Length: 355
Image (cartoon, rainbow, N blue to C red; front, side):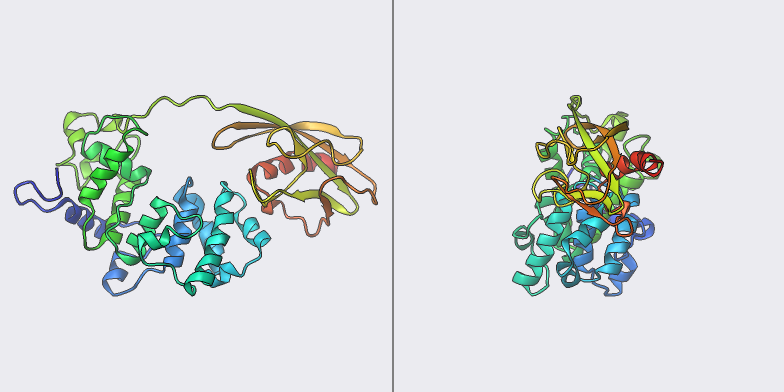
């Protein structure tokens, strides 16, 4: 089913764009179809920032982060000049912290090597740190209207159903991308890319797709076969391994003991509490103290589940820890911690306050 090959029927891209013109989601990083028709050009910086934030994250989770980032750093030059710790602090809670490190690297490369302007082509975008094939396609399409094929999880689901592709993911990815490329129009490619993603997010949903109001209900092969809710098929997930470790949270009159993690590796460059036994870093307790076990926190990373046993202690002033340093309580901000460390603080803080 090539776009528009059914007896002179309206091309699939046109019917989807007509639907998008009426039903496009309103997002703080998006230029609406009306504004685009009026000549408003999307800001590549905002497109790039939103695409990086949206990786492995939901739109609902990203909205407030995006607003805070763009209020604080409204241009790529502003972000490039930001302190690493400020950016990592604002990112805390979004997860996948390598994205935040690459965000800074990319912003600085755009300023240093491209005079503060993102390259307009997909190939040019691929030369920037942290920008892979999907992100390069999304930016070139959405910001520059290049006919790049943009395929995320929503698009894969739509294509699997539209063409009734029953090969399980991830083996089906190449075929789904090829199908998506067949439908990508030469004009309004940016709106089209967002339209397919909106279709998957709002109508062609993982469960209970709303086929009755879908602009592609007639050509959808899976709907005709009655298997739309079964697609895309996926191979069974394997159980994640479990890692266990310890975290030590100490308080004195000097403040809370924290350390900055190494730039490379899990939670790279983030502020956290000294720990051991789960990430290949760390070591023994950072201080000799009357440590008290106060509980456990659990956190899921991409490739493993983590169980951390928490120890707390109130210690006298003047001690020199083997790792980290005491941060004054007035400066310490739990919101700057990565999620797993914030979970640990939530459990431990009540025990510390009562000691």
